[in-house]
Image (tube, rainbow, N blue to C red; front, side):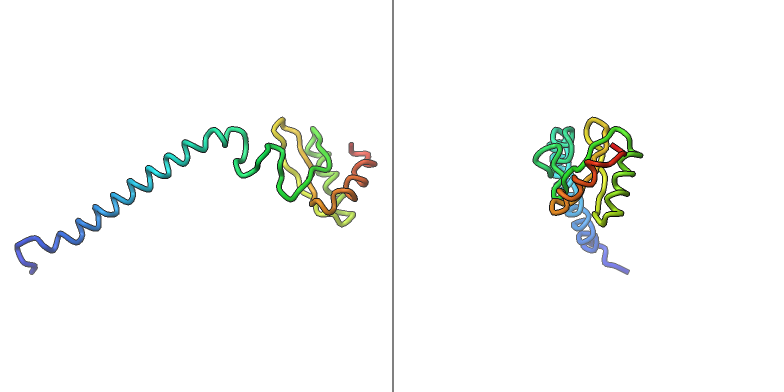
Length: 115
């Protein structure tokens, strides 16, 4: 049976208090971070400098119809060019390729009946 002076409660109470203090500090830091990022998040991803910046990828074609974008992506895939697609701010679909394959993909897509 523990002694009657209550010292055995100091350790757990200190641990709970410290966890609570750290939780409040991290919650406050996290809340400020999310509230500060709302302006940047409203314009798109904050990691990109410009809204149409896709990092290592370049847009080869932009279309209103997602099915046409799939056709273009399949056409590029049949030619051995890796391609993906992304939705642009205005709702259109952009077909993206890597920069080193941009010129070849542009020539293939330029003569495409899908456009």
